[in-house]
Length: 260
Image (cartoon, rainbow, N blue to C red; front, side):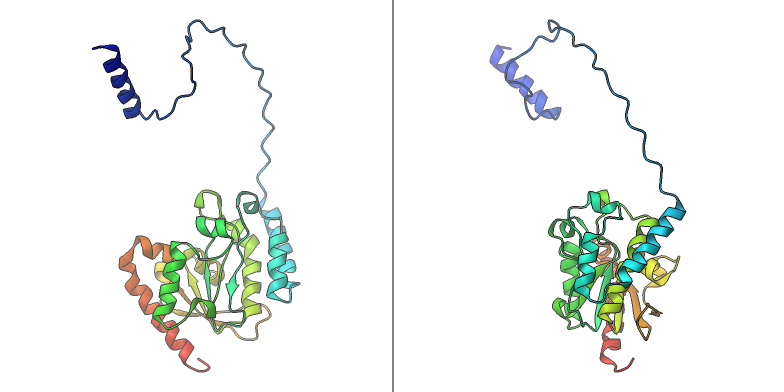
């Protein structure tokens, strides 16, 4: 094997091994290099202690008062954007607050922003949001006539599930949004939003398909509430669309029935 063939074979071996770029422009003889002195590594600062349940409860009480003080959706949005009491905000790109018709008869509440929502700062704009738009269109509703939001205004890092403390801290904000919009009907998409707002331990498979009433502070009447599968779940499990379609038909009937 001549030198050219050898170099080509070596390059192919590098590519097969996953080596895709050179780290230097000149070859180095590592055996002739002067040994580096071992760097003195400063001891890492002690990790902050985990927040106690009592502290988490105190913070959630604070958000109840903060949210209750907002008298308009615009004021509530500004308050959520300014709120620094949730660690999720430090890892998120944007704060994602609800949008849509502020006098909507129907309000849809999801779980937390996804990657695209976090990037744009808007709820339900990724693939799941596009499916939600088609779901609404299937019962003759336009997205702009509906108010859409999430339990959490910040995306958890790595798209992990939010903790119970994070949900409790942010829940007063979504409950205040419900009170200020005052919808006739709520759709809770996904297990996190359904279990949190309905105060249930059952999973979404058991919670979906049944009408419930959600009582919210400062609303005279309970809100008719339907839980269903999250659009993101339906993208992964298309077979579940049949059950989601039944839920949507029930919502359509409820909206078309006066005083129902």
